[in-house]
Image 1 (cartoon, rainbow, N blue to C red):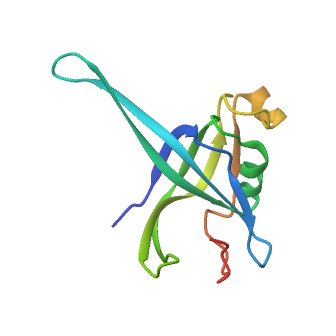
Image 2 (cartoon, helix red, strand yellow):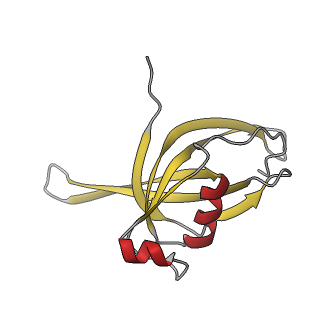
Image 3 (tube, rainbow, N blue to C red):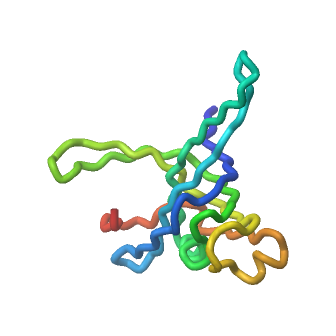
Length: 141
């Protein structure tokens, strides 16, 4: 048995980038920051921030592109995926991403593109296509 499940609560580092495949499927890409704090042996406060690349497909991706903005706090549930590509110089590069199956808009904090229902309910949950990319060889990244 194996499990590939990630749950994150963090803040967007920049506005989402929304693109569409040649077949019209939406895909949103953005990064979120999560931070942890602790006291070292000397009692000094320490902090470490991790950045996570998030990919959201389908209608859920469209809604993220429409309503999320830099600084906004969100909940993301998904799985870890690593993909490779060749850069312009022909070098193989690897990218590790979180493919979101569930996104929930949390508190304010970023931009003014908040969904009215997200503001009034304290959080709006969005479900997409199960986080699975469409069968399309023409993914725009």
